[in-house]
Length: 235
Image (tube, helix red, strand yellow):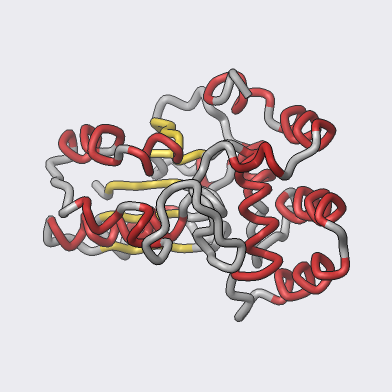
């Protein structure tokens, strides 16, 4: 059986991808992933022993073959991270919708750009045949016990404690985790030291408080009540 990990855009995708690649290499296994949300779960599972679905949503979850870990992030942070990366740093190759979005964001003041980002992340065709992360999270059934949901914030802060037990249960071991600290991805900056020109711009889980208005927070919270109630009750 494959070790499956389901995540969403702006839920530490690069960190998680490199970590899972490292776990596969450490254990002599093959890693596979897809950004597409329209490929059948068995098709991707046939490509590797450790597989990652980076744009998860309810249709993928509904597959009888789907099970494993589900990584979420505070939706407030998803929006802020997406705003800055879509504005400046995220690659746009082979993604015309993001090219158009970047042009729009460059013309808008930050507050309006954040509203435009919320709308973009909610699209059903955010990526080819793939819904955006807010749409994907809205469609996810959190009561499905085939999946164990982990918070990205906890995973990044202490991967040994958070993902380690799940790997051990599957007979897998972690690689040298010093290669997966924030400083290794940020050019040496520590958590919370911000660089708006860098794809890993902050790493501070409270950074969203500097950028989201109360109205924006209330709107995002109203979109995802179950997620907030279960995993971010204090937000």
